Image 1 (cartoon, rainbow, N blue to C red):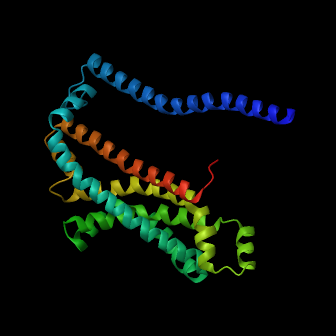
Image 2: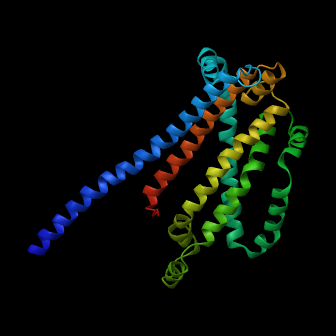
Image 3: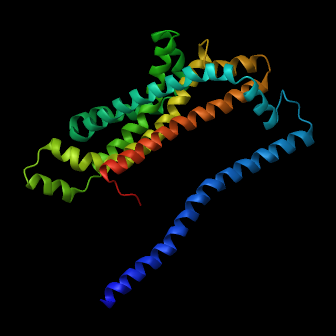
Length: 275
């Protein structure tokens, strides 16, 4: 009985110690980035004003914010196609990348035949191929989607392949000794254990997907944040270009946050442990 009481007291004491520590850690993870960002913006504002730098060279953060608030309808109208095409390219790259990774994991012949070529294409400077995608697929969204997939698929393939190959061999052998099929091993062992790897690749892929779409909009487009940036810089309107970049960052954070939320959902669904 005394041992039970002591264990309960220890549990309460542990909870009293760990709960505030957890809240402190999570709060620090929130306010530290905000403090750093706020400090950089403050130094930027003060530095530009003291140095007298003209807005055509470097506008102040307050000037950029004022334009974002004043022209938010125009910026939003250009942000929608960029965001949708980035999300579409990312989803296509994720689906294709995971399927290719499964093929590479389960087929030795496919791995020997495809992996060196994947590495070779990854070494090619992607921006050099963007005009070719425009020539092959036209000036519409198809070329931007295809280029977005092309530029973002590689990290997803590599991360997923590493995750599927890193499954616990003892668990795999145990499943096979219990006459489990390869599909059952995949759905119950390999895929759940590969989820942290997959989402690591997807977080890289979503940022590259946005870059792919922006590059496509730089080359040929009549709408989108990339088009707006090129149009503004051609007229030496740095404030508009910077405002478009701010909206682009917000769009990227939105997409990245969606991937992070999906990761948390799958962690709860499959009970993936986190270190």
